Image (cartoon, rainbow, N blue to C red; front, side):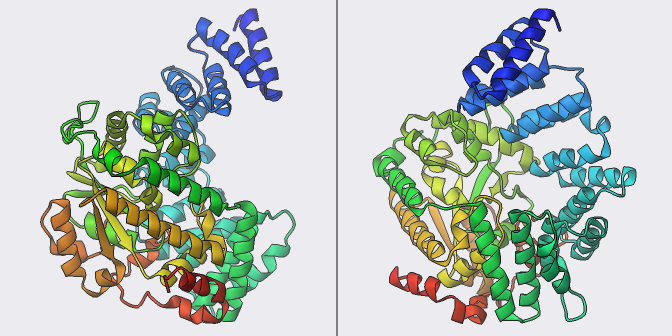
Length: 533
């Protein structure tokens, strides 16, 4: 680095510390104009652009950083993390392969690398690199935790529980491990973690996030032990902790949904792109692309079961939950957000190039389709985006899973989500969101005639073959009996239902809320007020 570049770097760092982003950008741009191979300046430029919500420029700066070869492994990991942030999946996988990054980073960083492979649906590589990391560093609690998660997604519950227990042996206060362990461990009066889960919140140094993980774990274990009053008390603590971390504004949700209905009326939805505008067999890169099967609905409505049924067909790849479509909307809007969509993305929807959005989505999903004709996309909140999806992807199938309101709402309440279900930690807000979801889905049916294919959860579990046949026919392939073998060992299920769905198609999952009915008055009354009892 020349003395001039060094001075510019110090200047950029100073402006970054002061959060004077435009001045910082000018300094970093001056560096890369002179030396396009200086990766730290590209990364800092990307961060500064993101702070100004110049999403496309921030993404492009990261792509430029990824073009530089021969950089130190840890700098390479920083580039890979930024590519992951922008959901630049093809570029991320190309970068990892081209740089040989996996063979260069220390064991503790292999965990991050494995998570990149997991996000791409490359679970065999994920498992391989995690097991390699454990050979190098068997004392890494994080590696044992990710090993357990990968095994859990693969349906190997007993091995997953053992991996989680190893993580806890190394770090007894590893709160997030308890919450996933409570979903796969066989809990009984002898084998449980109730005493530890009751004592751990008093440990110094635990965060509110830790408290929520521990409380959800305690709820799950007490529920399995049929101590429903104790389980309810734990669930109340869990919801309070999550609400403290993740506020929810229902008025903002209603405003966004109203804007969607205003923009995506029947005329706008019908206006294009025409069916021949977006090739159904080629992406922008010219490679063969799959037909997307969007599985939508509220969380815990049976969407994982539907994906398992679909992926039992040899022509269907299961991609699980991705932000691939939302990522294309962020590029189109030149705006970043951490959820499926926000008001800005919706406000700008009239001006999008939906053909480009569809092409970008197909490029990303082609990686996940593994050469099969169809690929699922099971990001539940995509129900919000059915209008944009229908415009961008006229060949896509839109499969909507719906379930009994009380079952769905209570199941949401007792599930620890990441950041996409902020409405689910309060009984009233949960019921109000359910109503808003029902109304938005009614709008999509009206303005997208024949596109939204409704599937009833109770019908699915009571007459699975009948429902699977009609779903297969709608999607465009023949029914296969293997589709009903949802407890098969093959395939990955990276959702909160990963353990349940491996137990086969069960008819006794409904009505769990009745054990807590005396505590659920606010939610049940609100649903009744909405005509959804």
